[in-house]
Image (cartoon, rainbow, N blue to C red; front, side, top):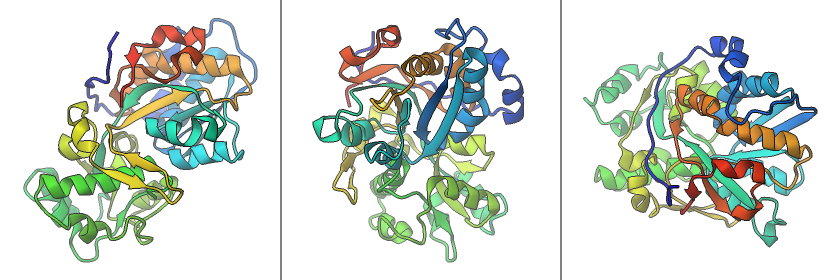
Amino acid sequence: MCDKFVGFRVATTTVSLTLLVMTASILFKGAEGATPEKGRGVVSVLYAGSLVVVHEQALGPAFQQTTGYTYQGEGHGSVAAARMIKDRLRSPDIFISADHAVNAKELMGQQNRNLVEWYLTFTSSSLVIAYHPKSRFKNGFEQARAAKLPWYEVLARPGMKLGRTDPNLDPKGYRTLFLFELAERYYRKPGLTQALLGSPTNPVQIFPEPELLIRMESGQLDAGVFYRHEVIAHQLPFIDLPDEINQSNPRFAALYRKRTYTTDRGMTFVGAPVLFTITIPHTVRNLAGAIAFVRFALSEDARATYLKYGLRSAPILVGGDALKVPVDLRSFIQGRYAP
């Protein structure tokens, strides 16, 4: 068992979404831990919005075809999704967050009615700068991609339309702030964050997570900050960033930890490597189906699909009360998550 959060393998292979949908049942047939008997009822999965393509095009259909349960997925910024649960606007069987801290701060503890008591880490990603292939700044972005020009100099050009998500509602939103703050130190460019982003919640740049991708793909934006797996799934060109600022590498966890953001509700989030978690909240209505989904999502075949969509491998570590993890899921645990 691994005692702490360790490094990841990187997988960047793109796949045909259509082909994956057509062959989903083949890819997952006999997946490790898959339910042998056909299940009944709906399994409601509320997940981080950046996972919409992999969940709706591959994982969800495959789970449904393999297990017999009816998959019902919905994606939002993780903080917004957690608040939906807390405010009784959603009652999912499964909650998948893009940041472990969303569980701890928004859903765990007596102050949050113990809506979540445990979670498992299972996949990870990094932040990148994506750009529209027909942007009038394309040449600059291509030069930055080839390391011939600093990416932040391209973003500083007059007329640049940059998009990002709300740091009050989405981990990617506050991680974007961390990215630019880390870049100030890494490139020795004080004032870079203010110059390129303005205020943390600059309304000119802020868009809901699904809308941000739509605006990027339609050409309404020149560039945006995304997770690497998002732009791979949507086949958008992008610029990889150093591990010191892209928040992907556990080796730099201490560096990331120096960045913080306090939301409009007074919740303070601390920088950490990008890590997705899965849990069964106490809003669960179909416990057997929820357990089946977690087993399915943690199977080797499902994890391989996450990798094909540009996500990265991560150890399966438990956070919260390990004794509250359903018995049927404990064999997957490889250690304890230590933020």
